[in-house]
Length: 451
Image (cartoon, rainbow, N blue to C red):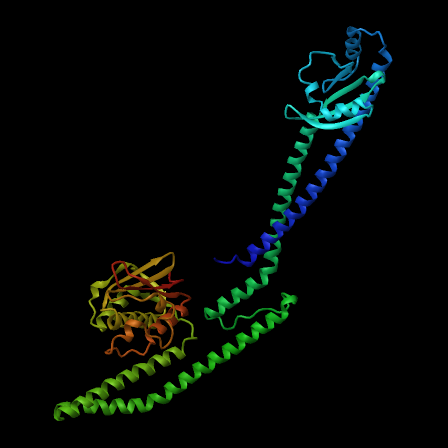
């Protein structure tokens, strides 16, 4: 399972922390408010019940008739939520028809009241919260008041909804704060990543400013030192390749001249000597190509000398030089491109050579100029490029599996490296794709080609 990114974890942490804190505060607040409201409601109900009990007690006598008792109960100001009932000599008296009020009075509460002990109990009557208050009267009479708490339950429900909304809003605010904090904290790391990408793209002079982020001064200094060391190493390698190539050119030219003499007199040699002379000539030509490629690679840091070039005509000329049919050149790339003619010519030539050596020959060369970006595609009909090779095929001295399987290939693994270098000199890229129907498709994109 893929682990979430640092920014996602920071945002989630802030949101979870805010939610936990707000939920805890909401729960505590709800419990405190609920307890306070219930206690206040209970005290109010008890006071009202004792007041009503005093009114009933003063109006009762030993010879009071049932109608008089009901009249006393009707005289009580109980409002809409309270129901008053009187238990007298085992009989129940109510100000109106009993609609289950006496059923809501628990038996345990009745026993305590019969013993002369005032009592209060919360019960559920018809699924609604109800408060029952029992007030004993003289002569064994008991006044019960059943007080509906539906209004209080509604208030607590509204409070629950408000506190829940506050908790969710706080969590969202925490996530927003986490997003801002992660953006602020990761901003220096984003600059480091951008700098690394610029340097990987060839901007070897790119450096970070230590004063921009004092807290990351050590990271910035170490990064700049690493880039300096890397640039120095690349420069040493470039100079070494250039020096070696220059030193090899003189003896190679001598060998090439001698091989040329042997080649011209090959018909005068015996078969064995002629074969040996041919092998020497071929290897010297291969060696000469390798030295030329190394020299070209050593000049890779030079900027592209852009000028208006008829790239379709140049592509057809490169095909003719390599005895490839000009008809494979197509696309909508007509018109001049602002490119380095020498670099694009070598780029096209190396792609055609690569297709001939490893892909059974080029079958299509497509040119297109779209929104100022020049696109060059070269298709072959070979076995294609494996996914593993696609990651490294444009490296120096890298040869794909198909190349290694061909003993007759004379390549040294520098042709595609030069293609990538020439593309980078134009600020572009070189990639390899799978050609529909089989084979490989090499794609080069060169920005800034519009005249």
